[in-house]
Length: 377
Ligand code: PMP
Image: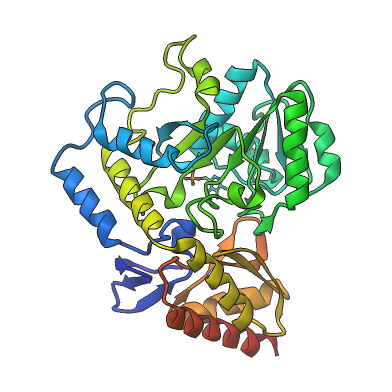
């Protein structure tokens, strides 16, 4: 986009040339509380005055880590009572894949076409898009891809499968929600063959889709839950949660199975704690749902083929690639930052911060709708 950033506050990003932009993508689903939320900044400042990095994750007892682990797991079902901190989304998925292998003693994985799990080798191996994978082959062996929402994909899951990894709503693949019944059947199939189910909620987490986590809407509890992005209010952090039983296998042979120097950085943990506390004290599920309602009400131009997704994780599918380019450019000109998804060039990603005011939201959406009208004539 070529924007040179000066500062960012709430739903706005300011560039060095003095322009103000409405952030309608939230750093790709990161700034759910907006930029520099006061509670997050306060927690970061307090931690800065205590200590920064002191030791490789897990060696010392560090209060910001243990306090956040307690707060996070208190929001999760009893079967997700342990959490391991890392630095990013892809690292959370790497940890989850390793944990599934170690726990089950199996090494086959089932993943989905158009799924996206990150760009390190393990995560890339289960990412369902050849254009990203091909240049780096050979990747991990024994990965089997099914079609998302396709009942036939369930037959790929068998007694050799360590785990199924998936996003409850595919993000980069084009904002495609899983079908509820299909997901429930997939959970049953995993139980039948004792394969683990890994939910990559890196993008869907922390109220983005209207519930704290998307699995709550689906009524399907994964065996491993991967988180990152919005977790620490703009600081880098990731995590994977599972049961103490499953994590048991990570404690031995070798004694340290997933060492990370910076994982669970105290400043990130302090920021994550403040972020989650603020989210829980507010009514952000309702905010996400009402964002969806307003989007569906205002974006009605003929050039729009479909609005899909859930809560504030939405995609606007436009008629063609040229129209999409024109709309994104025109909106940027008008001071609205719109996003794309990695795998589609006719889909505009809509992921405003959950703190956006209704009037500001409506006005921004009206401008987007006007751009679509203008270029689809
Ligand atoms: N999984 C999903 C669903 C994602 O959307 C992303 C990032 N777009 C990742 C994993 C990778 O996260 P990170 O960029 O923090 O490694």
